[in-house]
Length: 247
Image (cartoon, rainbow, N blue to C red; front, side, top):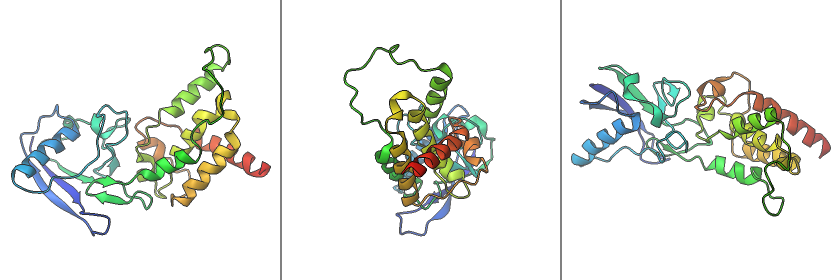
């Protein structure tokens, strides 16, 4: 395959940045998208040019690091996949591919395609945990949990924090991410003891970090590689309203 890549290059947060054209050839359709970028970087290094900076880690769709905007869509044209799970057979020979970083005030660009998503870490630090000392681990059957609740909690817990929801939202809202982290604990009995303070702290930190509000357009759910449901946002809103009234 021969392709033309239009890749966002930006030296640092202060740099204006621009799209740069890179022609590539001999790309196998069986390559992953990140492997294709590896090939390009090898060519740039051989020529003495600065390689393109992009995030990656597990390359198995688990860590959420490989966050790229590809042809106007978070993680590219395929649904329910991360960038590292996207393969070049999703494109055609001769295609022009636009590759950009996440665009959000709360995700400042570090270099090229790498953005600072530590705002997510700070939201988790604000309350995305259980701090109650419960002693040794109990037998799995000692705390009965309805299957429906367990399934919903596990579904929310599949969020990998990639930030596609923020990048896809016209308001750069982090509501889907935060609601998933609130839901995975609030649904289970182990998380109820701190549920009220948790949702107040995490929503407050989300606002402090500069994320926008949710207007229910649903782009976040559509682009989420793990299919996190909008129902989590409704649950978080109910949790927040109840906790705010009591507070």
